[in-house]
Image (cartoon, rainbow, N blue to C red; front, side, top):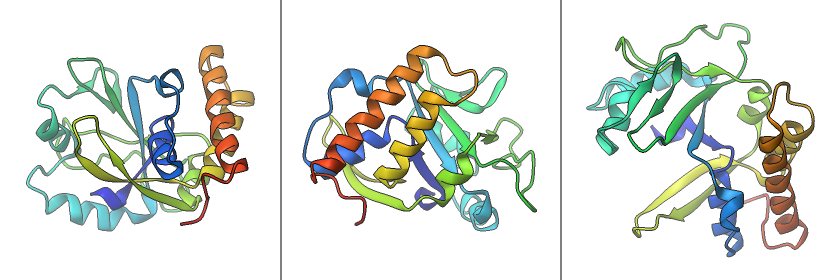
Length: 192
């Protein structure tokens, strides 16, 4: 299901640092969640691909990686494991014939992607794909957004997002500045 999700938010920094050949300071990467953007425009193909998996639902797929993942109470878009790590599923605001609400599968316990402000811009952002390596040495291809789109979105979060806590605003601005500095130095290139 990798083509159906785009890593947005803090975890995108792992792809940018790998592409630039640098290490970003840990406090800029500190987060207890990953945000996965789902593209509602490709819902028919997604439903078909999900049905072909052994898991049959997004929650059960996460549980194949870590059995402790459960849907977070009162947040149908979030799965959380026993260490408190969260996986949030986002989608653009409803447009045209987008179904809303939308549950990923017919499984009553499955997750529902939540509509997020300005996620439509992220859905349309140029893609950025780069291999990342985990601390245990395993590798994966990360699908994220182009670094300039990341900077633009993080600066919006830092300055204009409603009800954003000040601590998160400062982290958003810092992350935008880090990625912009890599772009300005020419060690990170937007196009691949």
